Each structure stands twice: as structure tokens, then as C-alpha cells.
Image (cartoon, rainbow, N blue to C red):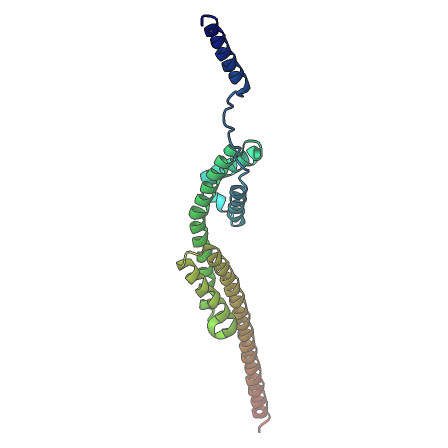
Length: 212
């Protein structure tokens, strides 16, 4: 019995060693790699294009500068550090949105004021009567712009206010030309009448001078 116990202990130790050697060391879980922020990049670029289309950066220069800086940072990190890229692009989206919100309202007010000034010029020339069809087309665009503005549709409001401005200007130019033509024609008629009256008076005097 004294010889069996040491052998049993030795066997147990051997089995424990083999078991430990066959068990692979635990590996830490892999950190998932962030995917490229394609949607964020596309949205930020699209918002920048909208802002640049109407020059809205000048109405919110600080927001625009921050937005372009974050967009560039997002583009530089894109594909290299996608988590950082997404963070920068998300900020750029918020900043460009702020530019469009602030600048869009100011730009819209400017375009509306220009359109209204053109409408007044056409009204002063009685364009709604002198060039009825052209004035009606301009006024339709102006009314559409007002509805789009009330609906918060800045892009269509800007487009229609701009169109209305140009059409009112064209209608005013036509009405002005008609007025000038009519004024010249009236002046010519008066000159003809004056000349005829003078001829008649000269003829009458001649007859009187000759004793008729």
C-alpha cells in the first residue's frame, strides 16, 4: 500500500499537466472594425452643394467654416479611421444644416424683396393691362413662390421668386416699350395736326391776301 500511493499521486499530476498543455490560451475578443461612413459622407457633401448653390455661406460664415473643416477631416480619415471619420462627418452634417436653415431664410427674403420690387415696377407701368399675358405669367410664379414659402419649401420658393422677378422685369420692359411707342405716335400725330393746321392757316391767309 505504501508503494501504490506515490504512483497514484504521480499519475494525477501527470494527467493535470497534460490537460493544461492541451488547453489553448484564452484570446481577447476582437474589436469590430467600424465600417466606412458612406451615408454620412454623401449627406455632408450634398448639404454643402445645396449651401454653395445659393451662396449661403456668407449668411452664416462661422457655421460654414466649421462645417467645411469637419467635412475635410472626415474625408481625410475616411477608410483609415472610420470611427473618427463618422464623428467629423456627423458634425459637418449638423453644421451645414445650420447654414442652410439660417442662410436660407435670409437669402429667401432677399430674393422675395427683389421679386416684389420688379412687380412694383411692372405695376407702375400698368403692365397688367399693357401686356396682360406676360404679367399674368409673372404673377402666377409669384403666387407659387408665396405658397412654397408658407409651406417651408425654400428651394421652390427661391426658384419661383427668381422666375417671377425675371418675368416681371420682362413685362415691365415690354410695357415701357409700348408706352414709348404710343408716346412717339401721339407726338407724331400732334405734329401732323399742327402742320396741317398751319398749312390751312397759310392757305386761308393767301386767299385773303389775294382778295378771295
